[in-house]
Image (cartoon, rainbow, N blue to C red; front, side):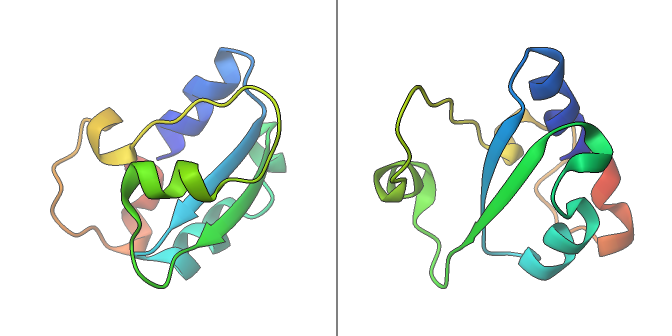
Length: 89
């Protein structure tokens, strides 16, 4: 996931909304407000996963949006990762 955040930043995307379900607390704890990576991150934690389309439909922000899935953008498998390995996702 860190790779995705840095890739977005490299392409000028510095305001990031992350929808979370699995490992939400660990991911939010690791990335915080995103300032360590030079971006601004806010989180939307889903009690029940809404999927990509559901997350986009729920988004109330205005202006252009870009949506990507961490699983499909990652070099890692979809197996469960431990919180200590989040930076490598």
